[in-house]
Length: 59
Image (cartoon, rainbow, N blue to C red; front, top):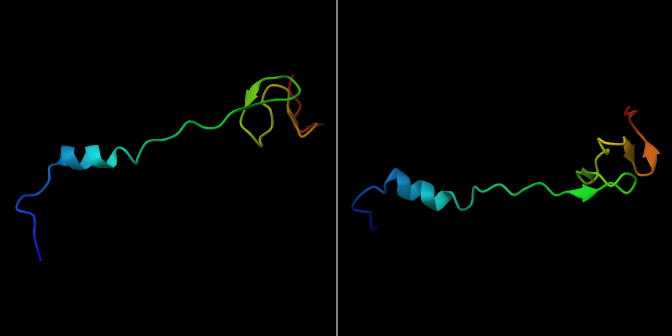
């Protein structure tokens, strides 16, 4: 079987792998009650509501 003549360098390996290691930004949605930006399917940190009911009390 063919064998590479020389070992590939660390920079070459890391530059090849870095393309697949990128992290995407988390999705964002707006709260229908207060309009604040929040994560989808999570309680709104601004008003404390989730699916038209108050889950946490926010002052």
